[in-house]
Length: 255
Image 1: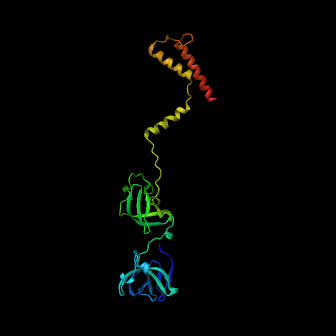
Image 2 (image 1 turned 180 degrees about the vertical axis):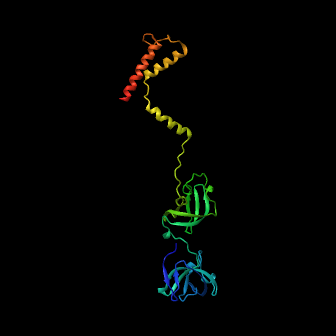
């Protein structure tokens, strides 16, 4: 993202900040050099912008007639010159980095916690492992590898800490949640409905049913069943009691 500053040179050429030119050194001075970039407005490279390492004498680095690559550092035609730099400017400066900006970059380093992506800023941005994809992954290398060209979205910029937080999954369509229903689960739901409509037997009814089942398996019709503290009763008597109890329960439920 380039600065929108545009200056029109005398020959109607639009000059933008960071614009690239190939020029020729026409004069060296103590403070820098004058470079011809094909415009009527002269270009000046300050000694501090010749290279990243310090320069003591301009003549040690630049010679008259030398061809050099330069970029527009500041368009100052009102001063009658264009300030140039031989140090390639950043594609994105800190003030140009904005939240939610979508840019392309290259993966330059992988770590256990994420991937660093070069986006043309002073430092690479970090895509945390949780921001690589919506899918669950164990390793960063499952999604990206060094040298991959990726598209990322800026989540946050911390200028003080010089940190840029990026995301790849923010540019992906979030998958719909998948609801898995097993056959056994469906069967359980189908069986649960009719059971809810039936009256739940009381503890007394359950005990009577259990006593009747045991008497069927072990004794004939006249078998005697005796509960603790109660007189002995025949199976038929128990059946009559149970029948009356269930009838009463059924009528109470309907009411």
